[in-house]
Image (cartoon, rainbow, N blue to C red):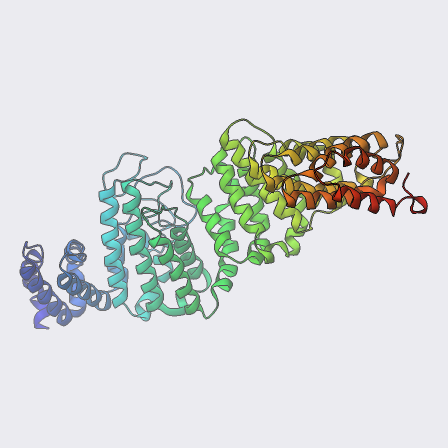
Length: 573
């Protein structure tokens, strides 16, 4: 009682000395404050504004002994005083500067709002000085980081019974942590300051889970906590600045899952759908840019969750992706969307999900095909390659049937033929792989004469490619095309290949049977063995024409023997 009564005399000199220039004096002041606060108990409540300001100045003191003692002082205050009194004082220092756009989830709304549990209902102008509608400077962000450290120390001292009545209001205030997660990504000094503040927020939230237990990891509180952690995890970084805050946020999600008594995958499955629904409500994604925080959040949610979880919320994922992949959209934005699409298509459980099977044709026709259209420039070249890589993985899943491809042949085939002649060598190789999936699925009944005449000259040209990898890759769709041939010696509407075109085709193939590369020779022999049964007499005539020009007639003789076995009566004509 004596200490509580005399606290108004004890605290001012101790708090002044806490700012002394010598570490010895600051340590002495911190020890004095710790003892006084321990004995004073709840009587410290009326001195909270001054105490918290003093703690904020020294809780990250350069002297570790001072910093440790101040953290202990904050823990004592957190235990002794009512959270509903000191938490609003801290939140006032974390308020976001005035910005016109509304956040999708709650932001701190000041002390009075916190006490009413309504931090998400309105914005209050921050006390910091910033340009109207602008972002705070690095110094302001650094001060917020200090107050986050103090918030963590205070909550570490509070028990579950103290936290419970205010848990929802507290988590609402940090669910959309705009005080340390910028609206737009930045890689300057402010970005480094934001990263430091994010680390403090993760530490606080991890401490909160430890203190409050399962109460904050389930239900509505769990969604608010999950939102805060995933927003931090989604902030882009760089190798120079490191990814510490992102790693810390992911680790905190694992701690949250353990507190809820479930796996991390199950936690994502519980909270990812409602969070995705919130950020995509009202078609907000139509205004996203490549550096928009909500776009980064969606990418992080999809990348951290299992494929089956993402497949279950395709109705929330595909509309934003379709908007990002609009050919009129920014090229960099389209590249990030294609990167996310590629990631999803790499997940076996995503591709195996029935929800994805129902959407595959739409993704093929409306989202990927428009992005393989040739446009000038290197960035457009990268977009085409990324789109073709997605097409390759999409077709490999088998969800796009021959019937569905047949409905898109008139649109898709000219684009793929154009891709065979792309400037990028990797694009040419991937297009060969795409055609290796498309042609067998279409089959001979869905490829007409004109389309065959469009395909075979371009595929033959790829055998002259500067890259051996492309030349080898081109052999697979050529074999598929030969197997899809409906052959007739003379032109017929019911057939798609005639003797004249076969002769030109064989001439282009036989040149490469004498290639210096043994791998190309072997691949070409396999291709020609498939061509031999189409018209054995014509095949043998074409082989004989080039046999004596080859350095070795061995492969030609083997092909002639093979063709002879397909001729009527086994005789060569």
